[in-house]
Image 1 (cartoon, one colour):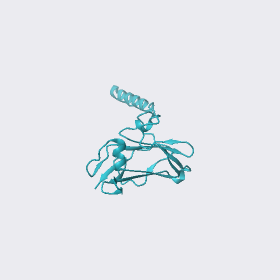
Image 2: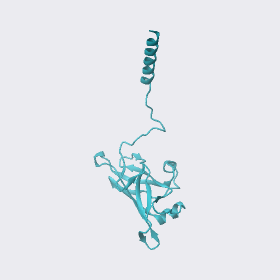
Image 3: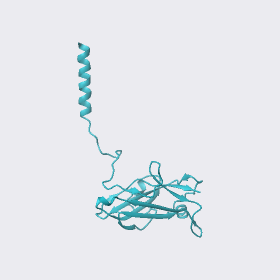
Image 4: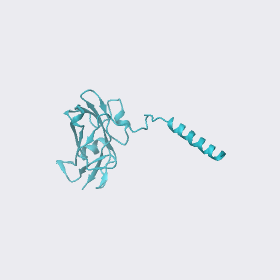
Length: 168
């Protein structure tokens, strides 16, 4: 009889402890923006969206490897992308979260005005701006692209980083 009472008391205590737990939103929680951003030209998710750049594709004389990243929000959101305000090529989010005006991949915002915005660059420019060499084919660039997007109501969204897979 005493064992049964102890077991019931343990179960009751565990139930009370679990009911007292509350999910907290903090720096380690997986918060998603109210307006989701997708990369419409992603070819894979590793786990972030991944686009490709070809080393053999020539943009212009001396410039290789076009990189295009198309960011989109749902038309049903009722919002439009005003601009891609900042772009950073980095290994961490801290670069895009900086309040400074220097150290970004692009200087001027990229205007949009619709539910889609496109960022374009190339492998030659990537090497010049980051100092990172292009690695062998079928490997990713060492730095990911991070975006800070401003919507038409001045809402700021930082979507998932985008990886670039170098092919050819």
